[in-house]
Image 1 (cartoon, rainbow, N blue to C red):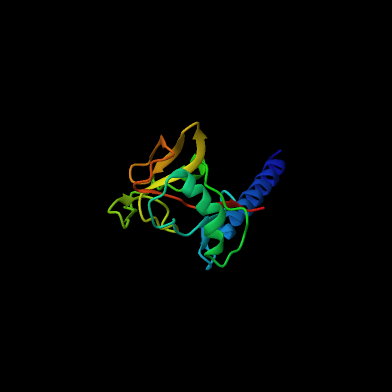
Image 2: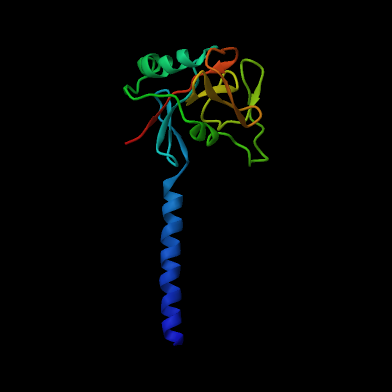
Length: 163
């Protein structure tokens, strides 16, 4: 029995070490692609490295990610879209006491992953209901709904799924 347990222990140790090595080899969650995009290896998404740099209502944001963003970067794809609220939430850095975020051009301090640069902290999401759409606030780490026609301080951030 003792020999059997030590054999099982060795097998478990090898399996554990292999799993840990795989995590170490996976590297960073966010990788700068050098073309205006960032790959999120955790969610298998490609993000724009920055937002649209100006106030936009929801319809303008949707058009910008679908028709304008893809033509402004080297990574040409035709499947850019607005992110879901859950995808935006995944970018918020809440649990790192050593990260204070950074100040945006509109004066807001945001706590988004440093791999992505925002010019203001409110980002439109794809989630909608009638005349409203979801917005994520990277300053406070909260989301809410806003009329789609609202534009002051709201930004578009393009994302696409990696196939």
